[in-house]
Length: 101
Image (cartoon, rainbow, N blue to C red):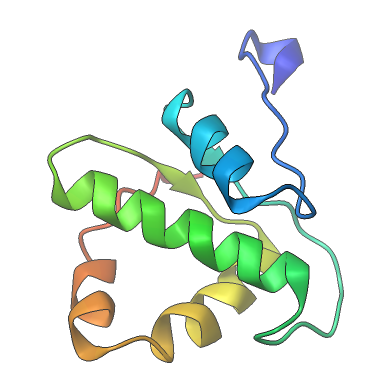
């Protein structure tokens, strides 16, 4: 991303929720990394990624174009993370801005 000219702001999974929300407020897109891991609710990485996806959905619902670029991990997370949400969250998933790679 940086070599293509983008500014990268890392969001670490072990940050406090307040730190994660602050960093989210100063970015305009999200790239979720890939990799193999057995993740589930309660796992800190999963919970952080779920929070970020929900913040992105909220931003898009409020008219703020906020793309989320999924990797293989993010696609695997998207099903469980969003599929287990209340019906309204799943319905809004279709409106989440995702670039075509």
